[in-house]
Length: 119
Image (cartoon, rainbow, N blue to C red; front, side, top):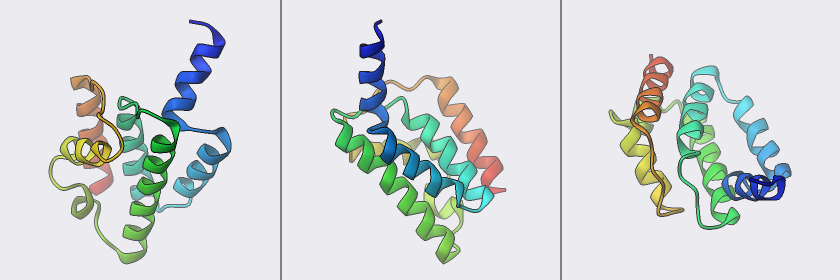
């Protein structure tokens, strides 16, 4: 795969670097347990490749919005993602894309990370 193809795929998943960096800065400001949950969801979402970069950008911005608001309101992580984080992310991603294949290992990593974050 050429560098152009790789950068095209990466851009399709995360969007422009400037917007990605802004998103990452927002996530970094979250309380630790919310940040842990967002980072776990983010890793899982990398398996879903939206049809265009605008959808990917919106997806990650909306994820940050959701957790920023939840942290501000004191909403628990379990109230956000429920008992099945994989199902939450699947439904969340469907708003932006048809989604992609997610290996069972990735779903277990997500579930374990949310367990740690939720306490």
